[in-house]
Image 1 (cartoon, rainbow, N blue to C red):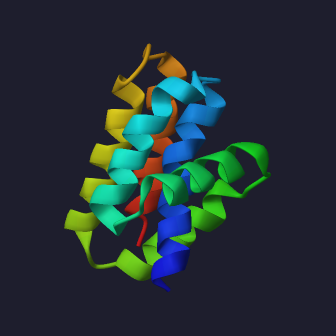
Image 2 (cartoon, one colour):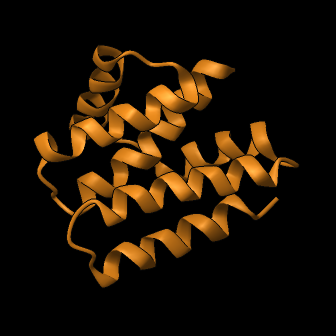
Length: 112
C-alpha cells in the first residue's frame, strides 16, 4: 500500500507541474526534496516518478481516492500533502488555475 500512496502523492505533486507546463528542470529539485522528506525517495527514484507522471496519462481522481483510502481519518497527513502542493505552486509563477486546482484537490482530499 505504501508504494501506491507514494505513487499517488508523486502524481498529485507532478500534476501541478504538468498542467502549468512548468520548467521541469527547475521544478525537479523541489519535487525530489518533497518525495525524499515524505517517502525517503532517493533523487533518481523521485526523478523517475516525475518523468513517468509527466509522460503518462493518469486519472487524478483515482490517485486522490488512493490517498483518501489510506489517510481517511488522518487529517494532519492530508494537510501536509496540501502544504507540499502549495510549495510546488509557489515555486513558480502562480496562476488563477493553480488555486482552482488546489481547491479542487483540497475538497476531494477531505471528502471522506
